[in-house]
Length: 242
View 1 (cartoon, rainbow, N blue to C red):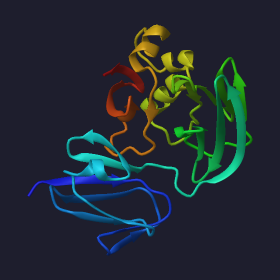
View 2: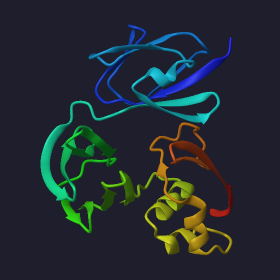
View 3: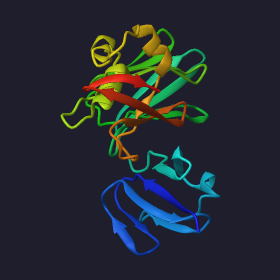
């Protein structure tokens, strides 16, 4: 029988099939194609298989046809630490900043929730303002601009933190993500203008875990889908990427 690999990211505790308990995210499990798997996050149980993933309260990301990431659709038990009210003609909007494992930006109008965004890490003392008919947030290397009239996130820049354990491809992508193009180009063995880098990658998120376990392949998320960027290395320099 065909096997699939599920990488389950979560906050708190989960129990799989009423047997295996984990408090450390992520859990990676090889499971049978089309066979039910039970996820219990203590508050609720979910029975699923790979044919009914859309019914789960998880974001499903396909890294490869045989490797799927399940991410909880947050925000769960987040603790509200800031509340702001703004009148942007013709509506009044309420913005909440809340902390769980990470910080969330959530905006409501009188009709209910309009938009929620996981900022990806704990953000301390963010400055939230109404500016030029938009809602802005600035703090800790994050800059956000949200257009409430069109329900559009016009800008979301989040500075990526570098770590000594990062592979050279991961370091390169973090430079690109931070728009530090000159630093990124120094890791390339060929000439490339920064406008080409910006156009080629656009907005993206780097997956925190290297589920493919290959330092020369880095998974990123673009427009809600996973793209595996493959790097060719030569003498500790990037000679090609695709």
